[in-house]
Image 1 (cartoon, rainbow, N blue to C red):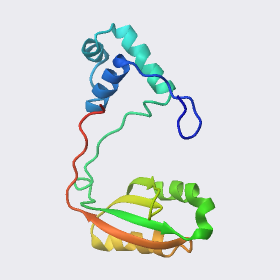
Image 2 (image 1 turned 45 degrees about the vertical axis):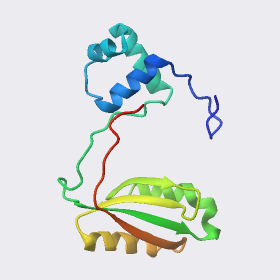
Image 3 (image 1 turned 30 degrees about the vertical axis):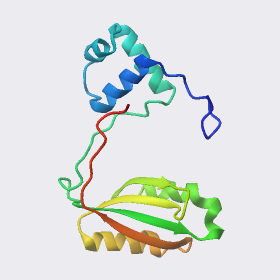
Length: 159
């Protein structure tokens, strides 16, 4: 199967799907526990997880950090629309945004906006400064729309 970039995507079977669901729920569980849940030998489990990583299906294992407890309690989703002349620079701008302090996620979109930028800030002054310094002052940016996030629930499993 080809994905949107023309890369051949690996074929996943039921064992792979079980492993992905378990890893998404708790990536720190030991290999023997993963193997038991998938009904396979631990050595087979290691090989399956290695193959999922090498094929790019599993991109990494990350800490889930609470922005509020880390000093950035205000979260926002900022919609960004670029000027037409900047269309050829969307991917570079996305990479630039992803490297800025306080940016949690950047989404390149189809539709009325070009990006959603998920940010965490210490407060309204920091959020305002981020929008002005990194977005509104950029000549390629046509419009920003900032939406505050009051609550967030992370999906619990990959299914």
